[in-house]
Each structure stands twice: as structure tokens, then as C-alpha cells.
Length: 294
Length: 89
Ligand SMILES: Cc1ncc(C[n+]2csc(CCOP(=O)(O)OP(=O)(O)O)c2C)c(N)n1
Ligand code: SF4
Ligand code: SF4
Ligand code: SF4
Ligand SMILES: [Mg+2]
Image (cartoon, rainbow over all chains, first blue to last red; front, side):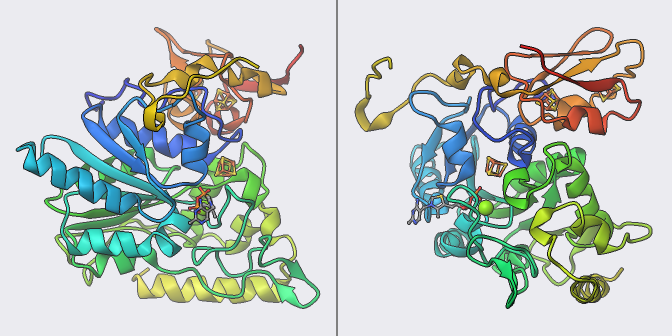
């Protein structure tokens, strides 16, 4: 069924994201689901830079560009102000940041927003590196990915640390809603946006959004890679409601998991990996999936 | 270059004004739809990062002012109703 906001585009065309950018697909769906009665903050990053080329803006809802580290703090302030004005609960308040602005530099602001129990939904657009400044590694960058600050070479396989499980860390704040989603499954993404906004208190949504420029894949591979990430078990879709972080629900269980190689081989950031490296990654994904119960 | 008047605190009151900037010029490939084949599943509409797919009564059409030619719609169309062609300018 179409939701009532279905046809209202709240991220206008003319934004400057690269051709095939996963953030564009994600943001169109997210803002449509949130609807016009929403206020957002955005941290510095690709989303902000590409949608707010002064004197233009692609946003059709009120937006404050915060600094890189404090999107969640500014959103907390908006929520507190609306409460003072007796407008509590009438407006959706969203804070957006990239993985850099969430996993690393914005984490303190985010944790504070959760702890103070603001009614804010924080949405992380994860492209697994600091893309806007030229593909620097982040605690979101997966093992084996070559970035400009974790380059692969004779002595290096690229990034040598595992990805931080940010949504589980967010959920551990006992917030009413934490979930992961991606752009290959738009209905699932929208459903989770809706639940996050309806939750009574802070909510966290981790949105996996492939980046053709930073991952070095074809601009037409974006959706396919988001799907393959789920089908291989590289990115697990789940949600945890009412603070039940120990009782997460897997929202998409691939019937038969595809080999991670199918996902890796389409991206040049992984082109240097040997069969042994790929085996190691496969083993880690197998172990993670077992932890998640599939 | 045209002059830009800077507002106090950079406040921008023109919601959606990015539409003034036509990204269609970035394109090297151009999508074409066979309306006979289209089953109106609207996957192309949902997946387009640029909002360049418009729903019509019996199919879809492209807004070539903004389409950047990424090819996602062609790849994701379940009935292969979309093909990418080299842009001729
Ligand atoms: C305090 C501070 N440090 C560094 C920067 C430079 N900077 C701007 S955007 C950015 C990277 C953003 O990465 P991420 O949050 O992952 O978003 P993406 O661009 O990848 O979507 C950096 C390092 C800044 N604006 N402010
Ligand atoms: S660098 Fe990546 S995330 Fe940034 S606009 Fe380009 S494709 Fe999108
Ligand atoms: S994806 Fe293909 S079938 Fe579906 S609406 Fe678009 S053109 Fe039509
Ligand atoms: S080629 Fe890309 S930008 Fe153009 S209509 Fe298709 S999905 Fe949208
Ligand atoms: Mg990033």
C-alpha cells in the first residue's frame, strides 16, 4: 500500500551527488516516509555538501547544517525547544550524519542524545569511509578495504581492523528503537524509518549506502551491491524494539548465503585481496552470521 | 560569474532550489524506456538517486534535465524495459 507521503519528493533533484550515489536513493525514501512535518540536522559530509550548494538547497524540509561532530546535539536542542513551545511530538526530528559523523567524530554527541532521551531519530548513512574529503578510513571501514589512509600495497592489505558494530552499540544505550537497513530493500527501509520516528524516545537507524566513487564500482552496481551485502551476510538486517538489544529480530534472512567473493569482486577497493584474504573474510562473516543465528 | 547575495547566517529560504541546477549535463549515457514492456513496478522510480524517473499513466518517463545516466534503472528493471544508449550532444 502506498503511504500518504508516497509521491512527495522531499529531496529535490539537482543535488550534486555523484551519478549512482546510494545516499540519493536512501534520502529520497527516508524523507518521503518522514513526510513534510519534519525538521532535520545534517553533519558535514557528502550528504550535506551535495545538497546545500549555496545559494541552493535540495531540502524541502527545514534543515540546520551542524558541524561535523554535533548533528545529534543540534537535533537535541531543536527537540528541547519544541517541548518548551508545547509542540512535543507534533514534528519528526531527524539528525543525519555519515559513518565518520556517527561512528567516529559524532559519537559523543550521539551517545549524549541517547542518554538524555531526546525524541530524535539519528540516521547514519554508511559508505564505509570519509568520502567527502577523499576516501579516508573510518572505524566503519571493513577489513581488507583499500582507502587513501589505509592503502593496499606490498606490506599492507588495506584496512586491517574489523568494522565497528555501531547499531549494536547504539542499541546498548537501551533506546526504544535501533535497526539496520539498506537501499536494496526500500519497503523495509521505510518501515524502519516509520518505527524509528514513532518510537517514544531516541532511535537509531544504520543505513548501508554504497558509494561508486569511494568503493570504485560501476555507477549502475549500487543497488546490486547493497543487495549482495545482505545476501552474503556481510551486512545483516535487524531491528531491536523497546530496548531489547539482547533479543534482536533478523528482518531479512537470506535462504542460502552467497559467497562473500561475489560481493567483494565487484569493487576495486578489494581488488588486491588474495584467495587467502577472501577466505579469512568469509570465515569472519560465517562466524558473525552464526552469532546472529543463521 | 553571477553575484550571490549572502543572507544573514547563510539562511536559505528557497526550499528545493537545487532544481535550478540541471545535472542532466553530466550524463554520458541516456536511459530509454519501452513503454510496451513496462509493468509499472516502479523499481526504477524507487531506486533512482536523482528523482529523475516520473510515473505516467501507463509507464514511466525520464526527466532528462536531472538524469545523470548512472544506469541503475536499467540494471534494476525486472523486465528489461529500459536500455542505456550513448548520449549524443
Ligand atoms: C571537525 C572537522 N574535522 C574535519 C572536517 C573535514 N570533513 C568534512 S566532511 C568529512 C568526511 C565525512 O565523512 P562521513 O561522515 O563518513 O560522510 P561521507 O562524506 O562519507 O558521506 C571530513 C573529514 C570537518 N568538516 N570538521
Ligand atoms: S563520493 Fe560517494 S557518497 Fe559522496 S556523493 Fe559521491 S558517490 Fe555519493
Ligand atoms: S522498473 Fe521497468 S517495469 Fe518497473 S516501472 Fe520501471 S520501466 Fe517499468
Ligand atoms: S540513469 Fe540513473 S539518474 Fe537516470 S533515470 Fe536511471 S536511475 Fe535515474
Ligand atoms: Mg562516509
